[in-house]
Amino acid sequence: MTVIIRLFGRFRLGRFKEKQMNVRPGTSVSQVIELLEIPLDEVGVSMVNSRHCRLDHVLSDNDVLALFPMVGGG
Image 1: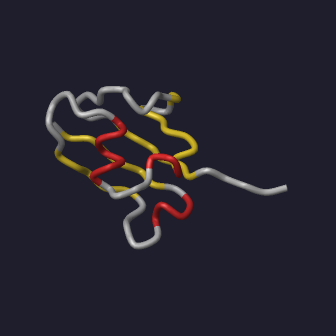
Image 2: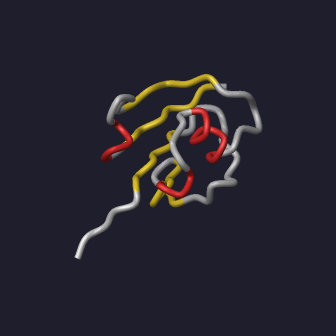
């Protein structure tokens, strides 16, 4: 099945801004993050189709997954 991955902030460095990926049915958000070699503890917000989701959310065909890094500051 096909999903669109959108990366934000430092996740784009050395990767991409947006990419279409083929994944197996039953693939979760965390599995995609691992495929992208992004440490899970660096993910601040994950969204599927513009809605917040958990890392164990199972993706569907044509979903749009957006990943935002943790943000710090003071």
